[in-house]
Length: 244
Ligand code: SAM
Image 1 (cartoon, rainbow, N blue to C red):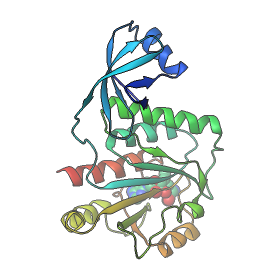
Image 2 (cartoon, rainbow, N blue to C red):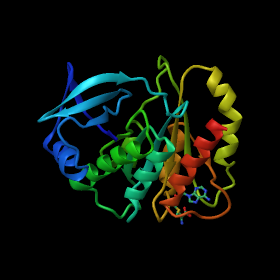
Image 3 (cartoon, helix red, strand yellow):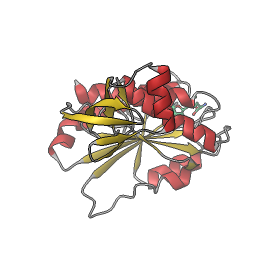
Image 4 (cartoon, rainbow, N blue to C red):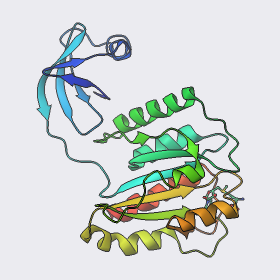
């Protein structure tokens, strides 16, 4: 059983009230039960329940299950279904999700929703046995999101940025990712950014701003995907291209 994220202090895991409830009441583990704890940052331990704490028995060597390139999803908040985006994109290997409020976004984000998305990312990472839990950023306006990870000449990583636009003549995302795969792997570390719009799509101005910030417009195929389907499909394309 893997539960994230735990705080390790020397040879003890400090359990929060929620974690104790989960271990003792939901999973019905008892004193002395062993379980696997992960910290969401790549470390896993075999531990044993002891009252209010868990004792670390051994550090586990786990194979890295992450995509070879870090992928950040900038997703305009849809009216419904952002939970699904967080869950599926976490399963598919996203590193970071930046929920954004675009001109045509209808959903009002709240601290409760933000906390729920973090919890979903944690549970989906556990389910997919990921080494890391993706970072869910607090919602910001779309134009602010463009400067969240600025390109810098000294930066060790290069950024490949794509904005998905329906009904355009732009090349398919797959053509870029598979064409660049080998070049990307041989060059210095690289990060991919993917931006997908809300139900009403991006405005012309938003596409212009993104293009100025170094984004390439890409297609996800001939059919118009729902704003919930588009990011999940885009992540699937990247994961399949990188892992095939
Ligand atoms: N009426 C909107 C338009 O024409 O832009 C449709 C928006 S679509 C429901 C929501 C978002 O999903 C789009 O902003 C885009 O980011 C992405 N999307 C959906 N289908 C796409 C496709 N075939 N190619 C590229 N992006 C797509």
